[in-house]
Image (cartoon, rainbow, N blue to C red; front, top):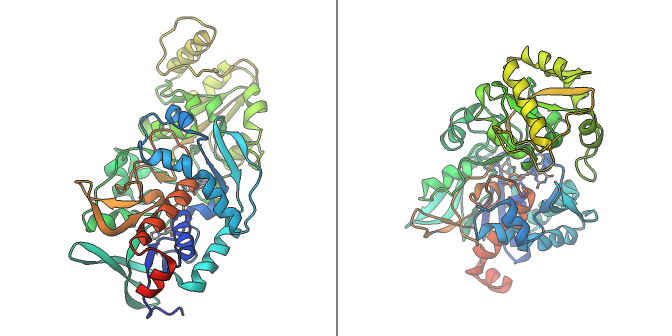
Length: 455
Ligand SMILES: Cc1cc2nc3c(=O)[nH]c(=O)nc-3n(C[C@H](O)[C@H](O)[C@H](O)COP(=O)(O)OP(=O)(O)OC[C@H]3O[C@@H](n4cnc5c(N)ncnc54)[C@H](O)[C@@H]3O)c2cc1C
């Protein structure tokens, strides 16, 4: 049992990408850190992830992909990327060569996330404490400032004072109430593609001491997955449909509702606004061979996701002609006549004809010319919300008048507003803003020597 009687400089609530990055940096600054996680082990969604550390390569690309992103937070993640990679290397964890066409425009590398988290966890334990399986976390305040936390661990109530508290509980994707409230009607039912513990605790803790909500509350990151199918960690990575960006997606009215080329994570967001929250992805054999069967990124899985979905009894179809495909898809509740019109209009528009479409034609339209043709019913999933607590560039949690709540910081998915409709990375936000949160929380004390004296 770690020593909880000596004082701590910083308490970090949540031990995923953001929490561990915060704690690691704080230890480097000489701090004694207490890291708390509700789960039985640290790691969060990051430990379930593919470990791709990526984002936009420069400000220009960021502005193109996310024109309405937060003007302060967005650029900081682009500027902080190289330091984030350096932090992984410093821990001795493997980092792959960089590639520069992640999802066509991102800069990326793969990191050995499990090895990294093992090193960071040991480091925090060696100078402070890491407690898993905690519950009932609350904030301790004194005259409006956050001065510590209370929580329950091993059947015992604890109260710990610290100079700062960093909230890094991973978002509210697991909470139907917050999803419905912010993302909108029907969002309460979206399947969760993340760790199951991120249910808005950080958001609620922040609100309990006067924090404001961020912008972009209705946006979220996730992917479409085959339907009907239970969503669990076995299918998170195996059945992620990155290649939907190259197909045609229609709702049950037989109509397109998005420019598919914006990415699966954008189609996924618009999908929750469609009847029954279901859609159908259609593609031809050229897309099957060149995109669906190919690895989505270096080190990604190459597999036939249509065949996998079929084996798991999702709604799938494979036919020699597009007309036969439409007949099958109509038996899934999709309007047959409208679908025929949609596909016809799409092909005419792709040939350059002037046709009114329900959604913009992708820059490189799906060919829909070579059989066999395939279809798959899809469902939306949420991994993290884009909204959360309002923060500034130093991860200080802000109230409705944009004044910092003294002593309180947030990082990772708990810190909202940085991303807009499109997605420019998840882990990188945890690493970049975790580091910044530690810097800001400990800046008030100064050097490691002064920290030790202050303790
Ligand atoms: C299948 C999958 C693949 C992914 N692949 C990638 C990828 O390749 N690249 C990428 O950039 N992103 C990826 N992501 C997204 C990425 O994992 C997340 O964006 C990132 O982990 C968010 O970091 P975080 O620290 O905010 O949350 P998390 O990493 O989820 O950590 C949150 C932690 O807080 C803990 N917690 C919750 N409530 C409490 C509480 N009350 N008290 C204490 N602890 C609490 C949780 O148990 C958890 O450990 C993927 C996600 C998934 C699910």
